[in-house]
Length: 149
Image (cartoon, rainbow, N blue to C red; front, side, top):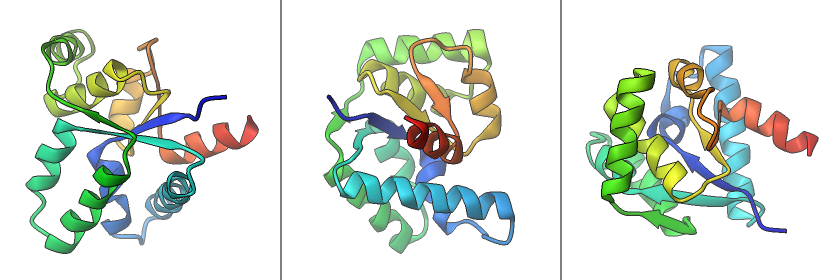
């Protein structure tokens, strides 16, 4: 049986660095850290993309940026900028009103045939729910779904 391939967007990678006073943020962080451990233990696989490179390079905090870069070295799949990805992203922008960078992340995950796209962006989860090619979930919902299987 092949392992589940995940794509985490930039907000997922940055969730542990957010203010943890909100219970929902703290729970999302715990779920993200659990997923991270499963990736490191080779129970799940990770995809990385050019748009993650771009967004992470703009992170003004050196320690956070460097910590997030390490995930690129762990990724089993690296997605480069392809015309097909850009075309799909434009379609998501137009048809689903998804923001350009989010649309690129989502298109990368679909292009490489990830099983799940994980984000802490509630608006993105809502807008992407009707996209049949991929399951878009919050990290908490992914953990709950994955543990049921």
